[in-house]
Image 1 (cartoon, helix red, strand yellow):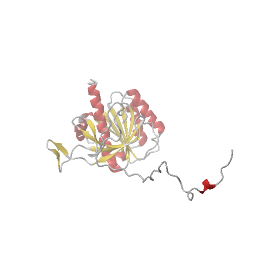
Image 2: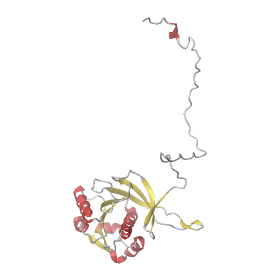
Image 3: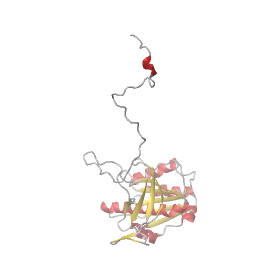
Image 4: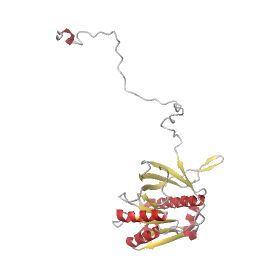
Length: 267
């Protein structure tokens, strides 16, 4: 991620389809847990509630946030979740803009579906600017939407990933479900290159861990001052056949080079 995500301003999280709504909301709520852990590490004892804003249509499609479940997921208590439902998109944007400048809130979520015309570059600029001034993150959750120009410096496309088996002292336990996992694609970033990876969320430690394939290994050499990587046995690289080299004392025949019989040009 090129150093992580910004702790203030607008962060855009996309879901390609409506069925990804749960994964998008869960990933964003995990990000709020990271913000809470960061505040605790900095000794900030005072923390405010989280405001979740959505239109009636968005809540009808994705459902309301479940406070008891989210509290165990990220460390927030159910009393710290405030939900605002707006019948119109303009009302939801107005609530988000007014809430974005409040320092008393830990984070603001704005959940929308599709690509409404009112959510243009100007509207996202206001959200981003007010979030920066307040020093708070503004999570813009876009359900079943395609990418379009916004003021958010980061855009992530999130979907659910299969959970791995639960790890025990004896190894992975077959038939069990481990930590929740998300497939994250970097669609836009000012600090990171485009890429896709799988993250597992640990709700007890409130931390993400990247899941790597079992057969993964570095594909580049070690640092300049370090030693080179040991070659992997059993790898074969095929090249095109090369013509045999011509000996230095080989003299071409007359049939191959009839031009040798001609008279050389003087001068």
